[in-house]
Image (tube, rainbow, N blue to C red; front, side):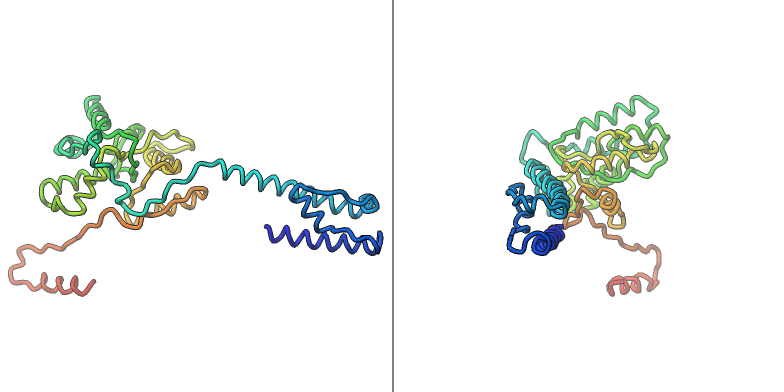
Length: 302
């Protein structure tokens, strides 16, 4: 744009200087380019009366004056808004930046045993009972701090009645807290080494200073009831206030958010949160060579 403005000013000033020389006075030398620059910076100076009364010069200068006023005020407004806008937060680089403070006694680590072996994990979720809903709310109060990050994810893929989706405050509607609790079980039972980096990372992320569910959805656009959890997550992400979306590598939430909310800048962390090792077990094969052959396939990198 600046190149176009400069080229336009030079061409117009050259045209007007030629017009002055051939149609007004060959002895009068007036700096038209300097005049146009002074108009652009709102510090214009006077024009000789013989030039000022010329219709061609007046007409061309009026167009430039309108253009300069609009562009100058647009640029000033943009600079003022940039100077008054709040500073951007520092970009996170790794999962370690998301850990809650484990040294603060007032923010004690979440009581994992409180979750284990209870109804919301081992049974199908039901909101027909006020007692069950009260139990879910009691869990909600144990992890309701807003001082940490909000970790967001897709909702759990289970069939619910349409009206159940409005209970967005239930943290077990989302896959991340549910799956994390299952992994904590494995850490406690020894299926995964408790001192492993995964268990340690999980324990830090489940710090009660963090939150694993968004705020209630305000229905800013016509969502279906079944899309209620996704709408709440989407609204929370667009606020850009310490929100982290955890997604599998084959999911495309990042692509969706980047394409539909171009004014916001979304980015991936440099490292991932979880990687699972899958193995192939073989039982009762007696003298079969099948496990041996499969081990060769795995060792070859297939």
